[in-house]
Image 1: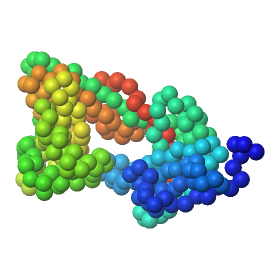
Image 2: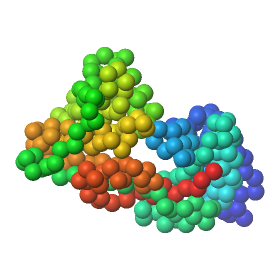
Image 3: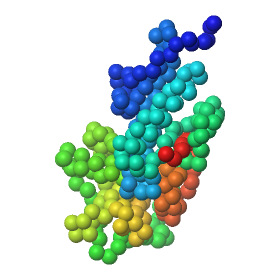
Length: 278
């Protein structure tokens, strides 16, 4: 009967799905050899960003309805294996869902995912006159410096630092391109030779983006991130850049609170991060 698949075969494809490794990817074909579903898992261990649930597993899944449950089951089983391989770390399994994608939202919530998390967008309107803005300063004994990224080795070290704090692992070429933009601010804070925190801002004359701001756990709550953001705002004001955008995962409560303290206004939820704890 048309529309009914008598046989389905699930297997690891030759190449991983999206950014997932082959062993973390699955594809499904029907009895005619037509692909009717594929998906993969990408994971990060981000103890410095989310210490309470540091294993972050993102599910990328697209399938014909007849293959959805089979593919979902295989991906969930693989997610549990990844958790075991990572020593049983507390984990969060999630998938991205556009705000208006009701079909995807209904499927994953029916499978036990919640919609409590999301990618949140914030904006700070850069003051044209900084005299009225209250400045934050790094703790006594620390020093903020511009990061020297002229060599490939230094750029790769900087990108590795982003990864440790849970930010997207961009390639060296990505960073090189951003360095050519009208706005590029890379600053780090040290106490002597000890690393305290760092920040990256990129963008155009019309709009800058706070790509990341991170602080070592033992230094959090002492104004380091606020001081770095204020450094960026001062430079943007001097360049007449009117807006600074920032993004945060909703369950990262410290980042959400930081942006509000720094004067950012919430704009919108850009997408749901439907998920469940493992």
